[in-house]
Image (cartoon, rainbow, N blue to C red):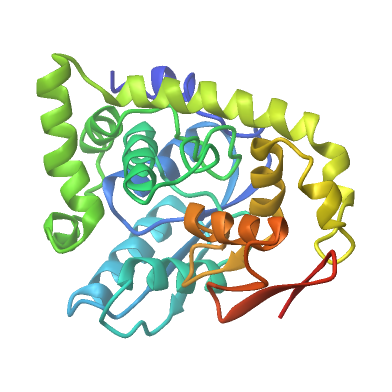
Length: 295
């Protein structure tokens, strides 16, 4: 499948004429998003972030700007600096998000969704982490396959860029993409990406249902809760409430819930087994009497 009409039938773009911001690196996914957005009649503004992480990153920016000039599309370039070292991907992602306007569209495909499910599984994520990108309006290509999008782009007059770091096994996502998924395909005897995407969709529906069931719990604040009442809650309800109450900013991935281990330690504070526990982000949760304090 590489025809624009076939691909657009699977896209989640807003109505024709809607102004949209697109994050375009110049790779086949983001370039495909740009071309499809124009086919859909959207009023496009392209945003490109140069991390200066590679010697050729300036050439990438110039290439994307030239494409936008040829297409008659407004282009904005952002220069950011991200130091090399641990958690580079997360920090670079945070720098991109901080630089670009909120709600900017990204070219994530179904393959990216499947990879994120597996990455979150390796981190021990809960229900939310196992259903990423589903129904996310900033991910209009989430039902498209990467190979179909690439075939579409290569059939046009535009040349996509190829980032050599996407092959570097030092990054965990690359190993998931090039090693783990291939092994899973072999073991399953089929393409597992659609299976993982469908599973994510099912889990997303259950997330929505659980959120509806727990809507009244959101009014219960961490400082205002009575531990005697919390101890009577079913464990699943208490865990979900804590994961909402204890979300914190990380290295660039947005606000994330605490780990399962942190939640267990907080439950021990609520039940009175311990009086306090340390949490990520330099935080400390303690109990005085029957009330909790987060510092």
